[in-house]
Image: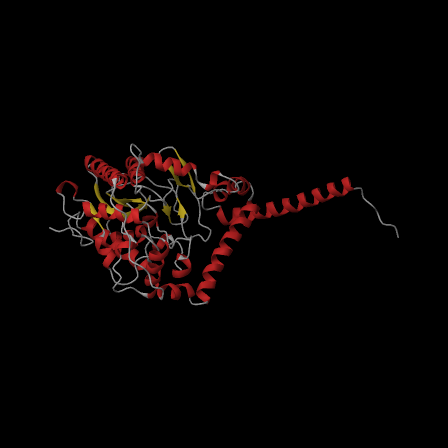
Length: 410
């Protein structure tokens, strides 16, 4: 029996061809699976393999249109709004429609516990699906109260948005949507210190340019995942299996970090001394808030501008074990003294009634709600999300006259 001996060049060529054929089979199979799963959702391999946020001429960045969550919990429509999967295309508004536009950042959009650090391991609360967002609950309440109308709440909030981006988002969408109401919730993401002559738009653009998706290795990985269904599947499986395994492991062990942090003693909330840098940031935020309010008024647009609550002001007298753990973790690991001072000054400025800006409301009562409110430094539990939606509903249903969040003194 003779053994065929191949030269190294021939063996290398054979290996390359074999690997190429194998990869082609895997790629074709992956594309068939992708098409069968995604043909009803108006998305593509390029969309699904790309980052969740993309550059935008008007907003600096935005949610990627038609991006579908891996577990099909939500999808972004053609305008980058968090929506029910398959509900991508905005139809023309009719006289029978009642439309509400939401702007703001991740808490309004529906983010759960932050994945960085131990938040998720403490709470087990992942990003909320579409049917557990403020938009969904608000739409349900409004629809029930006005059965003669077809109610639609558009969730145009997006993660890490600043107040000026919420304002730009409104300008980008109001002519197309002609909403009956606009509701925004902002404050947590805005710069808490500013240098002389520094502006929020400059800060946003600089931070976006430093986004990891524009740098290696993500820059290379995204190039591969936007062109290959197979490689994108491998990336998604690795990411989600790892994340799901992390959650499953924490749940199986009855959330040991929750018990650990609930029993950990934590120091007091700390504040920075008020200085010119923080003062500029407070004045800058106030300017954008008044600008948003003024434009809404000039458009005769019914609206509500909410100042987002934060964990550092949480009343700790009656917390569940989960939120007590979150609070202790925050106090020991994530305190930002300058942000505490910045937000305290913002809340103070708008804590009393102002007839010229009566639709600007701080959410003071949220800090004192019993039960489970915060799942990290500023994002909400499902219980709190429902209550916030109910407060917004009361305001809209009363045509802007109902006192909400118990923060305005007549």
